[in-house]
Length: 198
Picture (cartoon, rainbow, N blue to C red):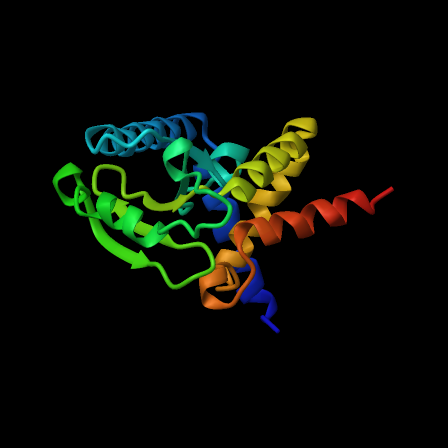
């Protein structure tokens, strides 16, 4: 258990991070960067003749992003909707995108194809935002839309989700690839907690 001074230091650090990430100017800058990144990646698809679009999911869609949040994108459309009897080759599809990323200002390209949802991770050099791209993640789209509804219903939901996610990040408890709860998992816990309050 953390000592009282360490807890106060963590609380101050989280409060400062939340003030920074929640400022209107910072949120507007990050949202503009997210849209620019989405359009850039959609351009890769168009140049390759792929009939698909990109959808922002996760914290950027819900409005719970912070200065350390990554941008989650999923590719959707007819080109990534396979016949039910055929598995879709996500890794090959993501690989065709990966080769175009360096010339468009992305670095630290990591291929995380051995997970239940294959992901192409990179960092946008202009904004410093870490970008995760998946293919046809309908659950991610629907979950993000549901979380946004909760956050729009009562502004305190968004604030508490940001606080809990920031705390989890500072305590190294955030990230399903590391065996911890994902941001979505922490948001589910917050919403469950709030539903049980009087």
